[in-house]
Length: 134
Image 1 (spheres, rainbow, N blue to C red):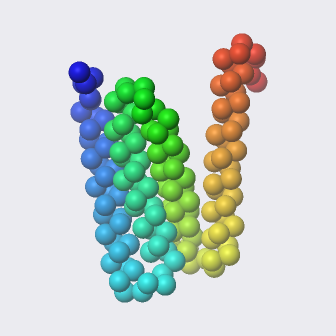
Image 2 (cartoon, rainbow, N blue to C red):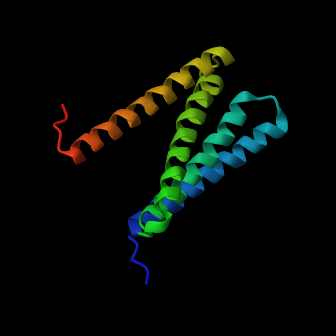
């Protein structure tokens, strides 16, 4: 028997899937005009990641213990895609920065996010072990 799902979760899931699909469609249209457009490729990654995030959000409410590791990997991959694709798209497309500048800033964004995840995981482990976390 499945657990009941909230309407809010369903709306968030559908909205993320719709927004992700719209971004992908716009990116494909831009790629048809110029296949060398860096920002369009980054938008393609961004759109796919937003849609994947919506599916991950939907899977969170499933409660199936066997799927949790796979669900966690999907969430991390979707978030990394959103941060990386979004950062690169903004820098190359909206701000018209060079490829090198966009790659450096995108690496910094992803690096800071990974550092935050690592520190938070360490804090959770220390709390579980009963140590005090500052």
